[in-house]
Picture (tube, rainbow, N blue to C red):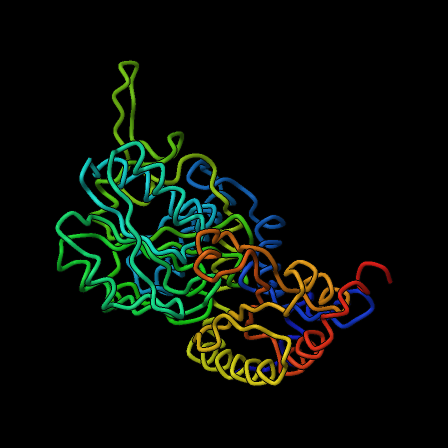
Length: 408
């Protein structure tokens, strides 16, 4: 169940003030607050068994090994994957780059096609640009509906025998629509192609089961789901991980090498984790997942939907707000204040203690689709309240006075 009073205890940041106002944090799509259970898990590692993993033959190194291994199992259980299919990375961006270069660069060739959409984050566009340039393959964009949705029907129309990879977000970071990955996976596999899912905005908010979705790859970040920054996950079906090339080489990912340049790599996931890993990050992510599991992902999804519905109903009462994704299912609300530049609107909201993001949100192609140069994005999480929404909406009502934020 959602218990805000408990969250006030669990999340130190919820008790902060900003600009002499109670802090109203609505930038959860960028990063989330961290509960004390995560901070304590990180502190426990540094204070009680701080050692490198898979290196030492002494007790605290063994404790580090055990807890790092447990963290991988916790992640695997959370997304219903096998532990050998979970690779720790620095975040979603690194995960997608590892897939693009490790699989795409190795197997794609001239004439092959990669399908994206105009709504994708830069991290799910730019790596594929490089792959296309280096391999000679082609990038095409699956058409979106008028409101910006990606539908299975449009995926089917875009597919052909040349399609080899479809790389899409399960929830896009600007419009926030939830994509039917399960149905799309069936379509993609019917053509013999692979589907890579950007889960940065979905895994923290809804239950994600990789076996049920039948996706080939999934990427997500710890910091958007109450975990630390600098830790993420690349999930891949084991047979695909076995044939992929690692992005990095170094200690810990090889079985042996010699002066002739012959290298024998370890099996996944070790072959992708060269060098000293973000041990505290993995342990912190595991603690965050346990925290989310205790609340229940279904409860989180249901609560955020109700809170979003409340926010949309209040915003629609204002005649100065332009909504770009009124019907989205996630907690992402993208809007503008009429006749006010997005950054000015965000600056004014900041003066009222409200944290939102403004700009192009790393989705620069999408701005042409929306017909604007920038937008404001408010994004919810389970620790937000109706009181937060009321403060936010009241600030939006008066956002035409944005100059006050600069001169007061």
